[in-house]
Length: 432
Figure 1 (cartoon, one colour):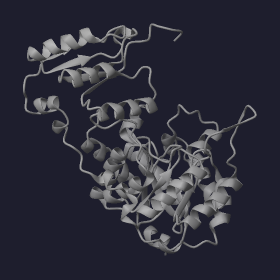
Figure 2 (cartoon, one colour):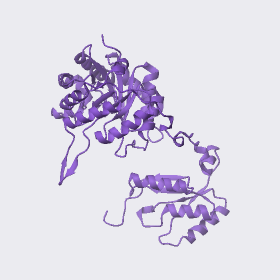
Figure 3 (cartoon, one colour):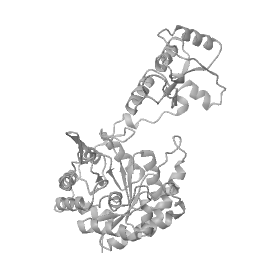
Figure 4 (cartoon, one colour):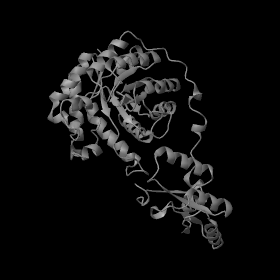
């Protein structure tokens, strides 16, 4: 009789299977197809893929249900088949795994942002994840695996929703970028700590980057938590070699890195996008003789005190925010930045508005896509020289993420606390 999965990994390094989507695509199924629905229309193919990973030596196989939530299935008019697709996916995997292997129920992001950036509330997200988890559990999975999340807030709802409702073993994986941090800049140490706090039994990283960057980040996560850590590697990104884009991640390369991850203390190791059973086979060879490493003592300083400071309530962040919170009537007047270098006229107008009792001034950012003085500079000048609160408009049309982060950090440091983010008018100048 097999042990519960969490007991199994106390004395063993568990090997997960590899990519499902890559293998489906390799069998001629177009990417505009709902891959999760193949559990119903082509279960034979899904069984063949599971079998290939089982024969390669995997200890755990994952269900073909990564995108089988209500929101993603709705795009294929299959939102009424959430239960059927997930239950069938779990049954197929359970049948192939038998009683000796483990089955993980694969659950991915929703494809929608949470409020205030999107339309979903926290409660709605939790209910959607509960809806997907139930048929997976009914179908016989041993553990739920949350994968490829870039938003810590969203994975929080998935973990809490599933744990509170069903109390089952759960793995949680975030993605990182080339800098080793999440899409929103959260370092791996904090990702691990927060996922543990949310209730995950195993925390880790998957997809997004190749093995080398992933190893550096996973070592940092291991040092920050005292629970098992998991990793699922993808084939990385192609490297330009003499003008050719070449994938350097071979099955043998993955085997070598599987050994390194195991020696670093990772207890669940698998692969994802761009891999197949050959990768799993080489990984199994590499880790079969390695036992789980004794964990080092967790050091609380892995997450800095600065990161743990309580968030400032919105109504305390600016005078205008306070007035909105207290339902005060607010007046705001727009001042357009000058086309040249002389902003004295704008300052005079701001001074007159302040004397008239106006609460704040709006500073557009290149209105009508014409060349004007920076809204950031004029906002700072008015706020410092006139003492009138500003609402700086910030157009995203001509900036990348790195530039926007720098601008917003600078604005905060300069004391500008009100930002209105806009798309911006299409450029009219230059060869754009």
